[in-house]
Amino acid sequence: MPVCYRHPDKETWIRCQRCEKPICPDCMRDASVGFQCPDCVKEGARSTRQGKAVYGGKRLTGNPMATTFALIAANLVGFFAIRSGGGRVLDALALLPQSSTRGFQEVEGVSGGAYWQVLTSAFSHYDVLHLGFNMLALYFLGPMLEQVLGRLRFLAVYFVSAFTASAAVMLVSNPNSQTLGASGAIFGLMGALVVVAFKVKADLRQILFWLGLNLVFTFYNTGSISWQGHLGGLLGGALTAAIIVYAPRKRREVIQWTGIVLVLVVALVVIAAQAVVLG
Image (cartoon, rainbow, N blue to C red; front, side):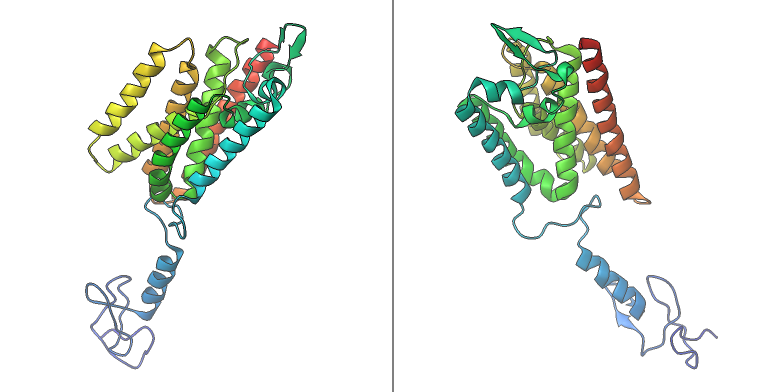
């Protein structure tokens, strides 16, 4: 007859519903179904305290919009810096693939060593309406993804989308035209939201309607809107989100972060290679 794993002198036919170790009445702990051993109860309490989100991220505590507000604040800082510093600050922060001469002034681009522009351009706005529309979209999209993915994975989607948007601009757009704005990262959040909704089998019609409307508006105004950045950000955000939500539970974090880093590395390699070509 089996004996309790903690009290070898006590025979028992009762087993823990979780690990199936034999437990005596003194060691039985009520569970939602049957009984659990003290070790499994401690493990369950530890996991609950860790507060893992659905896809492995840490469950949010405190303000669920904290990261979104931080990103909005960073964009506001970029906006006021450009408005107060004028064209010199704009030329330093906006993404210019190839260095060029404008009037009598040489404007440095990524090909000339201004590699920071592939990131700072995602936090740069000159027009109030441009800033307002992007921040409004971030305000609505950010908290939803922040709560589902966790803060770190949400930030990963945002920044990877910004870099893939810059990679697309470097690769396809006019190398002598400047690109700025958070639109590439915002489109990345849209792509991520589509992937998450598809994963949980949610109704995609409303999400796809707004995404389609934004894409139509983008390609209708190609003269003033960077369709390259929008499309690059959309693909980057969707791919990053797919890596996060479809990673198997076994070794989930390793697979997620390895995949995210690979997407980021590919974007950076494209940027660097195109900078060499344009230089």
